[in-house]
Length: 508
Image (cartoon, rainbow, N blue to C red):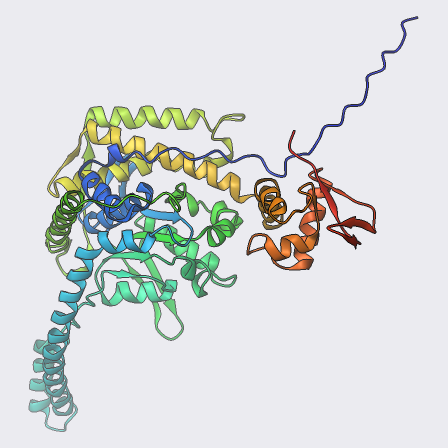
C-alpha cells in the first residue's frame, strides 16, 4: 500500500484586494492630422497630459464640422458628432486646456451676442408693427360691414406669419436638463455643443438624478445617432425637431466618473459606448520645466491658426432646409474604397475579440461601436482640413482607427476599474499608504514601523481617510485579506496599551 504524502502547509500571504489596472497607453498624438499642431501647442503651454488637450480639440472640431456632413459607415451614414469624456483629478489643468482650445469659439459667441442684441431690438419693432396691423385687421374682419370684413380677411392672408425671432447666439451649453437642451434647439442654432470642464455638475445634477437619468440617457443617445428630437409638454402637445446635431465634451473628476462607469442604466443602453473616454496618467508633480519664449511663440501661432480655422468653419453657411433654417440637411461624406477596406478590417478584428473568452468580451457595447467611432473621427479630421471634401482617404482612416482603438482600450481599462466597490477602493488606498508611506513616517517619529493603530491613519493618513469609524472598517478589510494582523487587546504600541492595533504584513 502506497504511503500518503504529507504536504506541508505554506501560508499564502496577503491576498490582493483588486486586480491591478494596467497603465493606459500613450495618447496617439501622431494620428490627429490637422489637429495635431493645436494639441501639441496646448500641451506645451499647459504641460497637461496630451489626452486632455486632444479631447478638447476633437470635440470642438466636431462641433464646428458636424452640421455639414454625415459620414459613411459600414451600415449607412451617421453624424460626425463626437461625445468625449475626460476623467482627470483637480489640478490636471483641464480648464486651462479648454480655455486655449475654445478661445476662438468664445470670441465668436461674444460677437454673436452683440449682434443678437441688435437683432432683438429690430425684431421687437417689426413684431409690434406686425401685431398692430394684425389686431386692426382682426377688428375689421369681425366688424359688421361685409365688404370691409372681406377686405380685412384678404389683408390678413397677405400679412403672412409673424417675423421670426432671431436665433439664440449660443453655440455651447454646460449643464442643461434635457428639456433645456431641447428648448435651446428650438430657439437657437441647430448644431450645438455640450461642453463642461466641471462635468460632475451635469452628471450629478438634475438631468442625471434617479428620476431623469433614463430620459436624459435616451435623449442624448438619440442625438448622437442623429435621430429626431421629441418634445412633449402638457398643454403644448408634442413637437418633433429634425436635423439637429450635438457634440459633447465632459471633463469629470474620478470620484464623479466611477459611478457613471458602473451605472447599469448608462452601460446597459450603450450610452457610455457613445463616448470617447480617457483617463490619462497624472502629470501633477512632473511639470517642472519652463516653457521657453521660442516654444511659446510657436505654440501661440498654432493656437491662433486653429482659432482662425474654427472661425472660418463656424461662419460658413449651414446646409439647412429651404423653408426651415433650424433643420440641417448635411451632405454625405463617403469613404474611398481603400478607406472602407481598412474600416472593414478593423471591424473584423473588434468583432472577433467580442467572442466568448475574447479580449473585448466584457466591453461589447464599446467594441461594437468602435468602427463607427473610427468613421466619425475620420470625418472630423477630414472636414477640419477641407470642409468641402467628398471622400475620406485611407491615410486619414488609418489615423482614425488608431485613435478609435486607443479609446476602446481605455474604455476596457476604465470600466474594469469602475466595477470596484467604493469601500474596496478606499481599502486599497489605505493599503498602499501603509506600505508606501507609513514606514517613513514611523521611523521619523521613532516608532515601530511594523505596527499601526487606527489613530495613526486618522491623524497622518490620506485626507479622505480621516474618520475613525471608516478607518477601523477599512483596517478590518485589510486584516481579512492578510495585509494586517490584529494584535491581542491590550498590546502595547508606542508606549500605550491599545484595544485595537495591527502588525503590518509586507507584500511577499
